Length: 255
Ligand code: 13P
Image: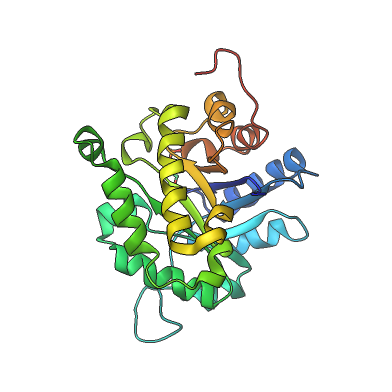
């Protein structure tokens, strides 16, 4: 049985004070929700403040990126062990913004994921097609290639520690979510690829949907059999809307 997993990716938002205030607002709203995993991914500079504010709660901490080396001459980078030391249990790798704006490659994502696993963290590996690729009927080819490259060489016995995030690039920050049916079709395909690579364990890997998830569309997306939670950007910046998504609260006039 896969537990739903909801992560708020704050991207380049919030200083330490804002981050701590968010946590104070979120925790009472999600108290006792044992059936779901809840993850916050603040910027590096707020990780320590969020870790302190989360102390004693089941909400987990994630970084938004990592460098694969354990240490060395890599100015500006942060190692998996440093994240573990701060209390991170997850790190996002291969987000489409990092792929598009910072030249991240599938091979680079795979080495980051392997380094995270080795340090005892769980990678949230992001994949997704652009609008041009979808319009050219290349979605499955793109996902197959990204999965093969981004998960290359990862140990089969650690498959259950992976989280995948399907985030169609055209749905990110646009207000235009994939329909539940489109998302399910992509998730089912991702699941097939995961089972082909990891065997039975592939069926246990949680696959999040990301791209304009909001309280109004969460319930319909989460009702799909292969959607196991959400990676939330904009609506994850407010504790109220993020907690509504976690509660799958279908709003009136939902789309
Ligand atoms: P939005 O929810 O703002 O579309 O962002 C999605 C995302 O990129 C999460 O990683």
